[in-house]
Length: 289
Ligand SMILES: C[S@@+](CC[C@H](N)C(=O)[O-])C[C@H]1O[C@@H](n2cnc3c(N)ncnc32)[C@H](O)[C@@H]1O
Image (tube, rainbow, N blue to C red; front, side):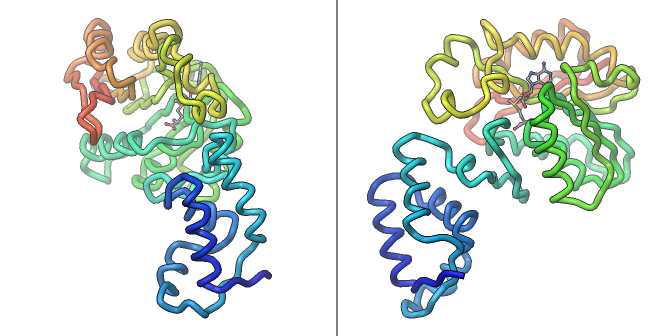
């Protein structure tokens, strides 16, 4: 085990931040690869001569930091970790880095289903790292859920994230195209959730490097107008939802009204656009009849 003084580490941190990037990302690197947490550092901040154990040489950490800064590689991929709500999830470049705005989906569900005792069967379409479904399975141990994705490698990551976050067995993972893994659950789903790929083609071409060059295209691109997958999910939802079952969708910042009309056209009731914390109509929800 290597050792370093608090003083030396704080000089190193200043030097790294002078090249660019933000404190939070540097803390993530130190915690996930260096093995030094933010709380270790805070508790020793006034004790400059004390020594800390560190997993890797500073030169090695610096090379990763520079990869992040100069090649625009997301720090989450370099650390193979994303913090989302109270979960610590493994992420590789096979899965989308779960976004902070998506955390609100769990709050929307909690608002709809206040009573924890209800036995709800939920489905997530396009689970990626598993973030949403894992959070729901942990919040509601009496619920049962199925999370799907088109990509087998993605499901391996989601499954290991569930195993590492919980001892529960109330979440299963299946591979398949949108609703296809749910053939035997027609009319039985109480709640379906999806954050599908919804970026329109033109917008996709102009995405920042750190997204376009690193995150999976299949997780982002929603066809010509961004609504290709949302349309398919909404069109088939009535076959799978139970009467009065809910559908919760995340959409691009400007798609709320169009998604609302698609839900209404498919006979959904209680249709509502829900804002994210920046006031953007990020989610559209509805209840099937
Ligand atoms: C925007 S990501 C969302 C990931 C995760 N749910 C989240 O919120 O971070 C969309 C996910 O849908 C998956 N996907 C894309 N096309 C699909 C399809 N036809 N059927 C099922 N899943 C699909 C992608 O592999 C990706 O994991």
